[in-house]
Image (cartoon, rainbow, N blue to C red):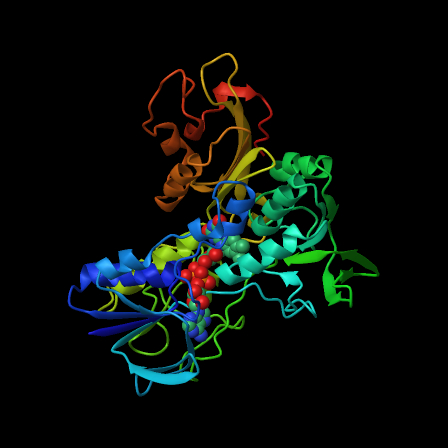
Length: 445
Ligand code: FAD
């Protein structure tokens, strides 16, 4: 069986490794237009944080690791067309056109930092740095810049604003919503971090939609929004990523937003063609409705699911909870499942409960603020958000598992946990018991 995978990033590599595990004699070929393999998209942030010495260290897989698994790869191979009737793929490599045949095809071409709504956003002076070569260019440009305008206060934009303001750059962050990180947090939960951004000198321009970006002869970048404009040495595009699927043939069905439509087995509308990662929409939780959630964990998990279903449908995708965790401006923040703000648009009656819990039994114990979202009638957990100055990030994975397995608040109170005074208090922070709060600010409503 010849399996061709287009895209050798998280989704494509996960699919390749899982295919190898399941089909020891399959011929596996990964194609990617990049010249490097397995670059981690926020490598530049790791470098700015001094966590790595150079961008060369930001890799999640090596050629040797793939080689050991007998997985072939071809880099600098840009796929230009697929022919699903003849089961062939055309790609360009160093100016040469190459055609290869497949028995099973996995499309894992991901997404790029693109915006069709902001004119001028594709220009070189508007930095994007998901790929290794883009990050190298952005690094050089940023070192030579004193001021930067960041468009989009999502995870990428807010992390960049923090790291660049620590380098004493003049940072302006523009966001069309009325608070930062709105996809993952309710306003009340993210307020302390937003306040800290302002205190650190980051100029926040909320409720502003960027319309155009221009670069003048002196390479100064002007970002326009409403009747206003800001000019700086450079700009960063931190808005939603989008897939580029120009190489598909007419048989592959797309959603309105031009992502590939797949079922829960990651099958496209064409037999033997699968799609995974950032180029598809996913089910959110148990819902049948699909949404676009471009995150690494979804890329990896959909890659594994597609590989498991190549011969026959065996394993369904369990859905995404949009779980994230990061550290910004001295806060550790994490989120999974629905937010209170978005729950207003669902038919379900969702209740919120906020608590501040001490993390250890020691006199100087730090606290974590947790907001729980649950179904009013059944008490089934639907979402959670956390913020603390201690590293509580791993706790969000416990909560994500609880949501995936449909635990109620009462089930969580019975969750088994370890006690050690140095690391926990009498009860674990993720056991949702109200009588151990550090301060009674819960607002059950
Ligand atoms: P991608 O990583 O986009 O990879 C697709 C691959 O396909 C690329 O290598 C591309 O070159 C190749 N390709 C595309 N078209 C073709 C073609 N025609 N021919 C050949 N090859 C092609 N998510 C998180 O969960 N946590 C994070 O911390 C995080 N940080 C991020 C930081 C930044 C700056 C950005 C932009 C995104 C970040 N994300 C993060 C999102 C994350 O990068 C994506 O969800 C993830 O990379 C998706 O993996 P993928 O394999 O589906 O696609």
